[in-house]
Amino acid sequence: MWWTGAVFYEVYVRSFADHDGNGIGDLRGITDRLPYLAELGVDAVWLTPFYRSPMADHGYDVADPRAVDPLFGDLAAFDALLARAHGLGLRVTVDLVPNHTSDQHEWFRAARGAEPGDPERSRYIFRGGRGPDGVEPPNNWPSVFGGPAWTRLPDGQWYLHLFASEQPDLNWSHPEVAADLDTTMRFWLDRGVDGFRIDVAHGMAKPAGLPDLSPDALHGLHSMSDSNDPRFDNDGVHEVHRGVRRTLDAYPEVMAVGEIWVGDDERVARYVRPDELHLAFNFRLLESPWNAEELRTAVDRSLRSIAGTGTPACWVLSNHDRPRHVTRYGGGKVGLCRARAAALLQLALPGVAYVYNGDELGLPDVDLPDEALQDPIWERSGHRERGRDGSRVPLPWAGDEPPYDFSPGASSWLPAPEGWAGLTAAAQGDDPCSILNLYRHALRIRRTWRGRSAMAPEASLTWLELPRDALGFVREDGLVCVLNAGTEPIVLPPGDLLLASGPLTSLTTSADSGGLALPPDTAAWLAST
Ligand code: NOJ
Image (cartoon, rainbow, N blue to C red):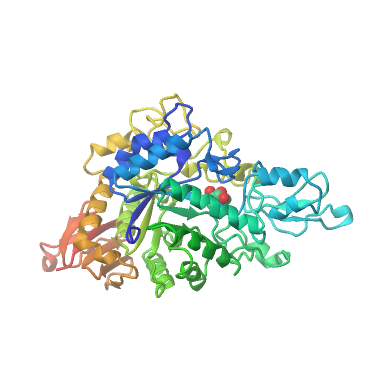
């Protein structure tokens, strides 16, 4: 299957490239830049939602899943993007948002206009409140974005929204809900898309009776990545994925990856059973700090979780919901060195890799001023949490000034900072030592390396004996990856050097003379001899 061992590139549509000059990325902007992605060497793109939406959660509040929002273009622009991508050998996958709709979706508008108890309300989760006159929400659930997970309508009923109040949760026991997802999938598959990324894929089934969260569960909640949150990963969700798979199986060579924030490895594996999804994002690397033991545990756990499923692991370092890894690893020069090393780790691991737009440019998060913040989390948390905008700043393409050729206009929806001239794709393209060229080089090796045999599902790796602050492994096909997360250089294991994330040094002791050392915060690939 084409996705086994593929490298996907996440295009956060608002922030990738703006064609029409309004400062917001769009489909034509993406099409213009597809040759850049082909040259980078990725196999596929994932486009975040570009469907009709009031943009309360920047497109994850979908008002019509089978229409393009005018902000991003139209269906003709989408078809042109798809044709150009396919012409360049790139697959195109798109987002599906089955857990909720926008409050402007025709179903919710009808529900809002109907009486309590009317069937129009039954596609969502409406309940009466508690306390005198039902003034208290039906249970104590908070929204993942802050504030309560319930909003009351003037007629007294409450509706559930695990995210923003503009994102009412769908009732998946209603048959029309599943039927509509099928129609949406077929709509895009018939146009030629190669697959889907499924938003909150562990969220559609709610616990029976919608019970209160225990004080412990409430206390421990931070985000939907909280593995102890009983509102996610309920068994009924697998029926949804079996339905998704039935639809996909009617088309050749198409796939789905689920966004699954579940802590228990065995429970993650359930999502990739043979009649469910093809891939489950693995967020263990993204959640791991810069520490050899923790990175190694992240890899081990991830491989264990898919062992026996026949599906490849799916590695993620960053995405549009989390701080970028340059920043997570300490920022500045150190953060960048570590990000370069982490890229070699991610791209050497057996399985699928997802690169978030800007990873390949080594972008850090941007500290945006309060007035620039747009993530609903900022308002909903009463300005206690700044939200995710810092990792969503538009990509710098060329030039010395913001918005760095992101847009023909003078500004961008989130302001790019001063000082990114050296990070632009154009500047880095000309610099053989840039992180962009490191990615290009690594992806070239990965594509051609011994027939990609190690990218087979469940390809195994063997850990090397190395100093405690380093990790390294050899894959079945002889590719060796070593990463030094410590503070002292380490001796490189034997093998022919293929690529290093930074300069190597010579060993100084006479016993080792002639050998090479891997400095701190550096990784290397070797061909085992
Ligand atoms: C996960 C998406 O990645 C995130 O951006 C969005 O806010 C939530 N799901 C809700 O759809």
